Picture 1 (cartoon, rainbow, N blue to C red):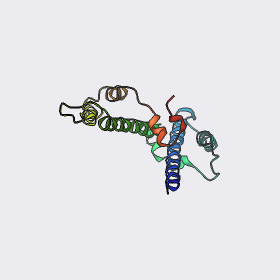
Picture 2: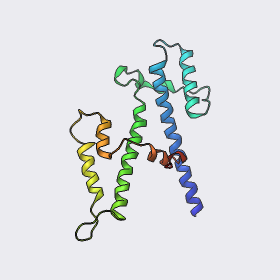
Picture 3: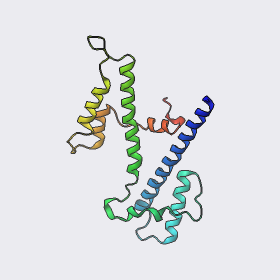
Picture 4: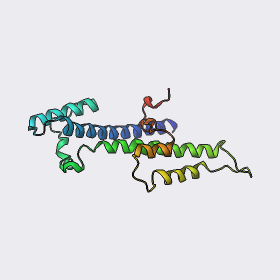
Length: 174
């Protein structure tokens, strides 16, 4: 049973990693179409750019009939959404990093964080939740998000938790 559980966990990580890689590939293609491809691309240059980007990012040559640009209807919505696919990648990285802060707070509460006068653990989770509400969910949208996130987390965003959820050995601390 333990072996079966480990295999199931590995398969789930592989599935998450493949789905995330697909998101990264879409973001790279979106950037390529908006930043590097000529403004009046012909059909051939579009297909060549798509195949090059997808193969470089995923490591797999796309099938001849595959056409990701055909499903990118939102990239033609003008400047409102141009080259914004990367926001999905960034959003996931930020979400996993914030999640890690709450996991750390739970561990601190349970295993050796500061104690109240009566011996009960002080709530690191509650304090972190208040900081999250005041910073990330706060009303001041005039600050750049990187500054707001730094105020919440006490540091810049890290991709380590995201990578560990994908099963990457690159996520191991140095």
